[in-house]
Image (cartoon, rainbow, N blue to C red; front, side, top):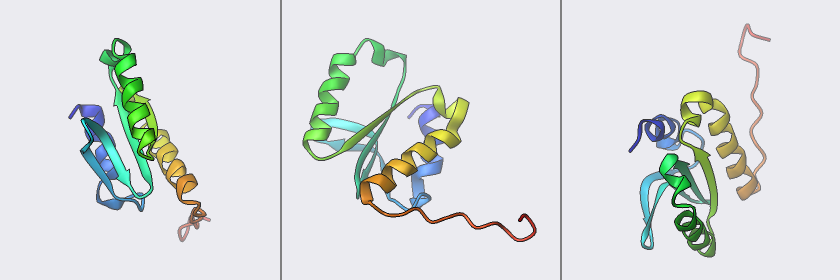
Length: 112
């Protein structure tokens, strides 16, 4: 697991977003960086090596989608640059996939 993947895993593990994620989850002959099985979402963090393996990644995406998964791809530097936006994008996609309405954030006491 790369350091960027570790940073993201700290935000996804233990159902912190309200959804259970698995890391390095096998799906067929592929391994997803992160997979949520309900709803079906795969999150991939792509390092520089992915530039040279675009065809392979496209085949993986087709396989995942064929089995009902949505796929989100992020660049490997994003967890270091803007982890909160990355986590927010994942959360919003999960909400879209479930059709649930997000729970509004209420002001904390003394911070209204």
